[in-house]
Length: 622
Image (cartoon, rainbow, N blue to C red; front, side):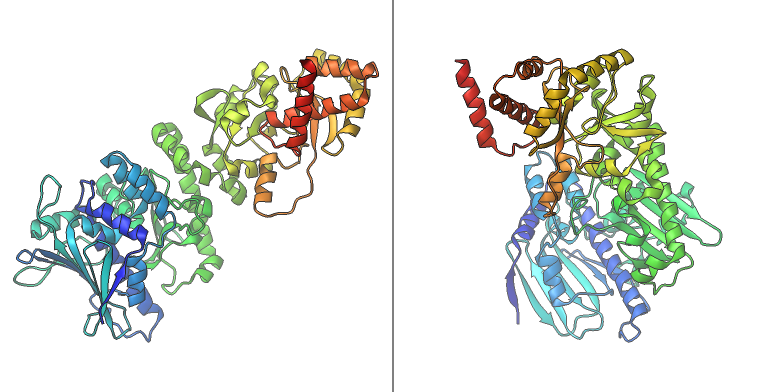
């Protein structure tokens, strides 16, 4: 029985974008379909190896391309794993991938073809690219080990049909009913053997399965070389070949930012061909995100998305690792315990980090792109990978007060430190604007000290876990005591401390519900007050993050620091010494504390009361 089903709305939108695509390189549809067929063959061989009872023929696994110039059709056929009806509906009728909605919004808003291409490349649209060159697509498939097949067909509009097929061969065939040739639209004759061979040679030459082209007469001809790129000498591989292989394994339509070759010999042999992307994958910070490294054993595909080979913070690294001495029947559980796998992982991580470090000096523009796109993920390693913490710090860049445009490395920061500065100063916050307008920064700017401006959410976490860099400690300018004064200034501050002692003690009592202490500040020059944390307190932003995640936290009282040279504070001291109305002074103290909270972007405990106190004071001045 034939059913007519509707595409999920996001799938329908994506299909429309493909049908009316402004992307000029439409040849890539064949790369996507051949890549899908290759994946299906990989999965069948693995399934047959693991399930000895699976009744399948694996003697001649291949991809067959059948052009029909008279009917203007092109069929890409494989005898791989195939799909069930539910898999067809799930994989083609629905886009289950996270972030699809955001992707579509960006794609609709993009203004030019290059930008659209970049966005499409980030997503990897695979099968849907068929509709760039076809006005109707027919798919026939049968899952290996099942008796009944499925036929799926659509014009790419709002619906598709699906029906059972009794005599479908194992695997999948995709038949494209081709649109007319149109040079202006960059659509060529995709039934031409010469054109098909050109596309396969350019994009899919390295696929390990034979890609055969059917002719009118005689046996189909294998048109790809089938040489594993990672096994060929580096001198024999061109940059274009690396780029096409990257696109095959990553489903990205952009060239890689950097290619990394690894050849390990000795007791445990393996080869790796890894890539750094030029753009952050759309799912980089999504819960269902995937890793990018495939595991092969002696050139036989074993596992996609091999988390054991690359840590979470390097999840954007794409490529293959081919081990010589692992079992083909290896499981994820075995990999987690395997000593050789752990050794490979350590070496691969060090190679990736050292490659990025080399980029800093040899390819500064490429490094800048890498850090802009992927730096947030890399900084997660400062928490997760203590063994490589120093190497990760070496490749980090941070915004700082030294230059509003140009980020700095820690090595550059340390090199600029003036004589006598012992610590690397930083401040975390929600934005650069908020940090730059914070009173905590005043004395540091006045005395010419550089401060790192840390605004990524992960910055709140790692600064508490990492003690220092290059023998210098990290010091938050919003926590603990700050020692910026000369000996002369310290002597004067000591005298002021005695003068203000009684007031500070009284204020600590009056504001006991809000702060743990009131003290004089050495970090303020123009503001009357600021609120700081104790050395090991959670920052306000981190506290807010924990509470948003539903974690119960005790009240964290902070410290109110007063600027003893500010007229408001000297006036408060004079009024206190003159035994002025203590209730009025208590309200003034409350206002000063509220102003300090607002100045750092904080939230008032009782905004209504604060507004009433300000209103009352303003009325008295009129």
